[in-house]
Image 1 (spheres, rainbow, N blue to C red):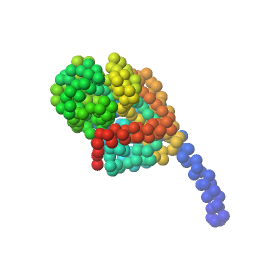
Image 2 (cartoon, helix red, strand yellow):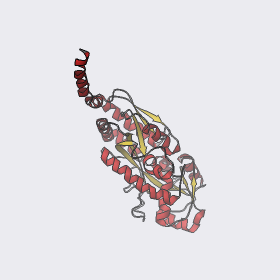
Image 3 (cartoon, rainbow, N blue to C red):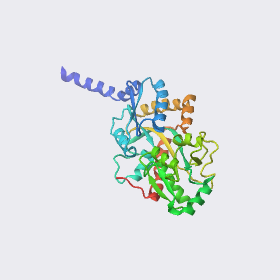
Image 4 (cartoon, rainbow, N blue to C red):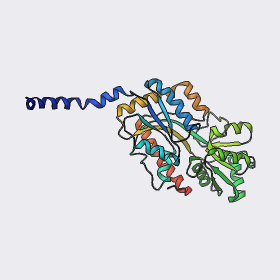
Length: 325
């Protein structure tokens, strides 16, 4: 009797198995989601992640927990998510570092920025701003170029660290304007800004939020932003292109990726929730305060964007000579 009934049971199981992924997608999410942020709490990346996640959670019906996992230019966080189960419950806040710069910066990297992840959506772009300290007498980018040429390699450019977007934006500036100056890497943006105000370094490229209060107070001067358009946070500050360096662009960005193999139905749900969050007026306003512009892409377009970013930053890394093990 058992032998005669076995084929029917096998057939029933075979019919049920294909439905499992669909059923999983329909019930997703059934528990909290973790969004791993490759930076410490309090910075632009963390604020952006928490702002968008809180709004998206309303649509998903589940909490999105922020897990700050800084270190090694984001490689620690990226590796953690790449190694996680592809079920949509562990996501990464991908950045220009993790999915643009690192593939060229590191000779040995613990993850593949393309093969190990499924793109979900681009959240926002964040321009860098070129700021000068009180010792530099320049009213615009061209006057800064003249100043640097007069000083030679005695001019010091600070950055949040070797291989960071701010450092590489400086290297692009050096190449575009045919300049020579000394790069001084710091362990983070805050100490570099402190030394810029104090006159220990002459200029730097950094994200807007960290320097905006100092620019408003007059202790630092903003000369140009590195995005194609002016930033709403600094509408009176021209772009680098407007300042005589056509085509100059060095924009930081933040997006969400999932481990490779995450079901398309789950990715689409996440994309819809995040895109809806970015459309919320309160979210747009908070991002603007951080110098960020909300931007969402479908998964295919975001994948194309990531590959283009890897190629674009590769030249900057090569020109800078920056490396990391």
